[in-house]
Image 1 (cartoon, rainbow, N blue to C red):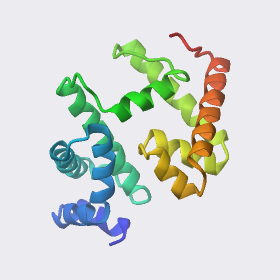
Image 2: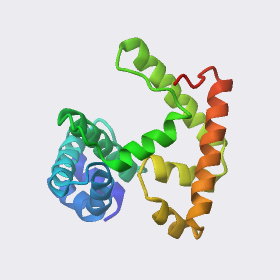
Image 3: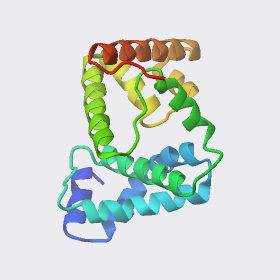
Length: 189
């Protein structure tokens, strides 16, 4: 079923919307969550919570052109919240790895209002930086750090060697760090 029709089902408040989302995107959404948690049960709970949250957010939102991205953002946030809530002492190795890769580019910020505003500004700067990248590099970056694809999956998908993927990501992070410094966000660790 097309995304436009699925959104219509949400707007009509028909439960088939959830079934159609699950049929079309469930596997990919679970992949995102599982990479973060490493736990099938938690992943399934996060998937179900995603559909509930989508049910509550559509309307007013109508993500006709970006339904998967909309759902992926929801499941990422729910999974992060779940990890925080469970106060996991041993977070997923992938989350730690990705965090370490990115911490050289973007300063860590806490949750105070002022720092949240700074975090939002940083997010805008990163988005602006990504728009400056060639499409293939932008896709590589987003798939690695947003959808959490593994290096081997990226290598296969892009037809590159794993070392080329790693080196390209390293160079993008280096460019991002330089861009952030020029924008007034120097690395502070």
